[in-house]
Length: 287
View 1 (tube, rainbow, N blue to C red):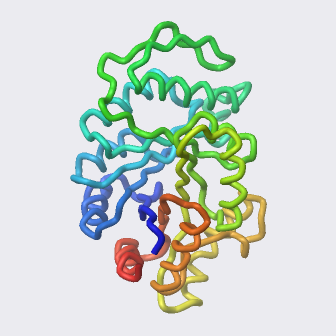
View 2 (view 1 turned 180 degrees about the horizontal axis):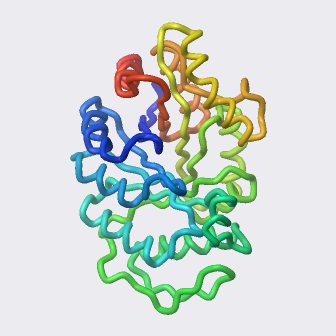
């Protein structure tokens, strides 16, 4: 298979007390990444990442994603620096716009989501590099802020975005782009074109994908149905056009290969249905 990192998501609906054991078992299976989720009302992304990192020895842990409106760039950089110093080389920080309705729900919807995301990512990356940051932006103000303990190994900061202008922004200011579930190989070709408009160096692409592995096609389709239906509505596309990594183990492995050949550097599987770790093991074995 094309050289691609395989990750697994700890789903937001799973109780957080199960995260340490899940992370250890995923690591034992040989997966490369574990990604945690930060959505309003579910779990905190930084705290979940700390739990997963502390429970494992080699897994890379991704935060997917911290909503910029909810996070002070200075505080976020402080939190990320702490994790990166204690667990060097094992953290990826995802930052995104956040769901606008949720941001409005807690009174932090920005005037300019694009400006906020750019100013947040730019300042967080600079702070993690140990720089003093002075910024009087449209959405962010920092007056001579500098980390006392910046990380020796700066973690990559990726932007979790979907729309064209945000993808161009990601290519310009972030180390990589995190793509939501449902996007297939054709989407990745377009996404690569958009991020390349502003990219000045290596720019990674991490793709989340719904996954369901089983030998009964009808059972797999039934299990996926509510997830692809809801996500199709969110993406504004027919349910049958929501890409998934699914089918028997060989078919699921082929789906990962398709994403890799289209430009994905990391594929993060969001398993639905019973026994997600058993499904993961089947996919890894079939690679």
